Structures are given as structure tokens and as C-alpha cells.
Image (cartoon, rainbow, N blue to C red; front, top):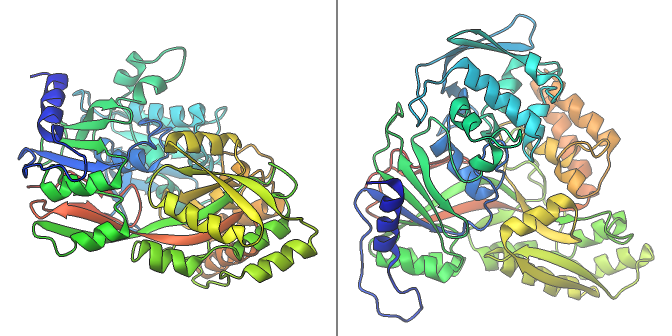
Length: 528
């Protein structure tokens, strides 16, 4: 049976139910060899690991692709073999030689040094949003070809010019952008020198446990077991269904029409905790939530006094305790708890009078209006409404404009916004993963959050680059703590929360695994 026919049959079986609240629907069961996940996938922009940088796409990559090395599932700070059976650091401190394990892509093609070279060089040359991660090694479009070389059919050597050690380089290579793609398959689907990027937006060419059977934007992502995987998955298919309405997600998992539901509200989680046949998994997350201000949008948003005032117009405790109730905790620094050097102090609280005084002292006249673009999903809309209420008390009207997540991302990356809600998920287990996003922007040449905020910071950039080079662990931690304090005090970001993911599962689901970082979602060992 063809993949498309299989997909149609599965979707017809699983989702041929009424979703309207109050409808009488008989309890159903998902097929025994299929895992059905209900969540929003509206954020998905691209399933090309050189481009995908959203929650949905990042969560898929460990299931579709392998890297040379990977983070341990239980302890992400530990690095272990994946496509590389072993590796050796060069005496120069700026090279690594990898011995490849025997592995095949979903196509049946063997994984070769040529695929490693193609994958890493294409990621740098495409220069999409996550490219800055590999840029940390000093790799650029004009030098990456000479930085990655084939020694023989089993060995590939990576060299770099940046003043960083092999341990940090290995951390970078655990990031999704370092996923290895099948050169022969991707090159055959390339058009207009795009390195197969357009094709990989909706297809896969990896060696992971699953391959993309089909993807329909804003509808469903269907994964099919990779028969050539070294670690064959337990289930034949995973269907990740786009269910924008959180109430519909609850209904699906409650009735047995979905096996897993993500992104439910605190009220819904509370209602399901004691329900028969349901279990709630609470997973610590490295996600940090923040308000992003476009400092180039107008003089007010570019004024550090406004940044300071905004910090006192957030009801941190109310959002965490009353709105989210266990789904997040107050956190006001760019490094999440669990990473070396993370600050745990929370110096800001809701203080409208203090905010009004800061604005008045700076000559910022109220009232005024700010365009506030927000993901059309929970909990973002509820948080936005809380912010709208508290900012209004200082004479600031937040004009909430909900939108599809992929469009909100696009506007943010293009600088076409005034204020938005965002979250950041580390790309690898090292403090620099976050610091490089928030504290690097010397000249607007790098795809960082600081650039999206229109915030040029040459001095902070130099300090951040010095921190990543520091070899003394204690001094390195101190450097990142200092960076956090400076950005915490004055920047066009207001850090608010650290996530705690609550995932609702049918009690039939066994061995589902999810780690601290967003890409650590694993379907390969799931059984029903």
C-alpha cells in the first residue's frame, strides 16, 4: 500500500469524529500501530534541519535525522555517539576527526563522509535562521568547504578557526542544524542552486527512526517508520495532527481519538489529572519566555527607560500562579535553570506606579498605543490579555493582533513588528546557546534575537565572544552571569517565565520520552 493511501486511511479512521463541544461521540481507539498526537503545528515553517527553527519542526528532528553526536536522553550535558562511532580531538585544539558507524538513510543509501560534508556546508551556505550556530566555529560560506574534509570512506575531519575548544564544538554538533541529510536524495531534488531546501521544507532525507510520509501545512504531519534505521521504532506511524483549539485537543485525548495532547490549558490539565485512562506527564523545560521589543520601530520603543518601565508592568506572579498554574515559573534571565551560570533572582515585580514614574522622568508621554502581535494559541493569548490589562494601567494600550505562528515568526525575523511574545529554546547544552542569541549583534550581520530587536551591541558582543573562549569553568560561569545581569537590567527583552511542559497521554502509551530541551522528543521507543 502506498504511503499516501496509508495516510488517507489513517486520517479517515482517526479523525472522522465530531469535534464540536457537547457532541455525543462514542469512545474510539486509535490504531494499535499508530501514535496520534494532537497539538498546534501552525508554527511550522520548514522541516529542513538547516532552516527549521520552530517548536514543531525542532521536535521532529530527533525522529527524522541523526547527527554525528547527540545529547544523552536523560542528561543532555552528556554527549554520546550517533552517526559517529568515535572521534578524536586534534592536538591543535581546533579539529575533530570522526569515524563513521555503519548506517543507512531512509532511501537505503549508506551514510558517507560525503553526506557529512554536504550537510554541514549546505547549512552554512543556505544561511537560514539557525546558521549562526555553525558560524560559532568561524564557518562562513567562503571558508566552510575547506573546513570539512574527507579522509577516507569512513573518516571525516572538521576544523575551525574560532578560538573555541573541541568540547564546545561537540556541543554545537548536537544541534538540529548539524543533522546529516542524504546528499544523493537531496541533490536530486534541488532547484535553482537551493541545495534541495524547497523540497526539504515538506520532505525528509535522514537516517532517523522515522521519515516524513506526508505533510499538509496546518493539517497534519505523518511520519512512517524507517525500515533502514539501525534502531527501528516500535510503531509504524506517528500522526501529528494540527488541532488549533485546545478544547478540541482535550476532547480527542479524552475520548481516545488521540494518544497524546500538548499545549492544554491549566484548567484542562487540572480536569484531566484524575480522569480514568489518562495520565499527565510534567517535564521540566529549558524554554524561556520573553517580551521582544523592536527598538527600531519608534523612539519610544528604542528608549531604555521604556524597557525599564515595561519590566514593572508584568504581573509575573499572577501569570505563573493564576493563569498557568504549574506550566511555568517566574524566571527573569536568559539562561534557564539547569544550565551552568543561570541566574535565579527575580528583581522585578508588578509596580505600576514605579513604571509611571520611570516613564515620566524620561519624558515619555502617555497615553500611546503599541501594536502587539501574538501567536493565535494558548497560553499566549491569555498572557497577552494579562499584559494588556497591566500596561493599560500606565496609559499604554496594547493592540493585540493574533496571527498564525509561522506568520508571527516571519514578521519578527523581518523586524516588521513593535512588540511580540516569544520563547527561546536552547539549541545545545551550553550557556553560549542562549548568550549568542541575546547578546551578540555587532553589526547586524548575524541572525540573532538582538538583531531582530534592532539592538546593536558591539561591547556586549565582545564580552560574549570572550566568554565562549574562556577555558576556566568558574570564570566562564561568572562571565555568563555578568552578561545576564546586564541584559536583565537594560535590554529590549523582558524575560518572564521558564516553562514546565505538561503532556497528556492515554494510559495505553508506554515509553514516551521527552527531555529538558525542545528537540528531545522521542517517538522511537513508544509502544501501545
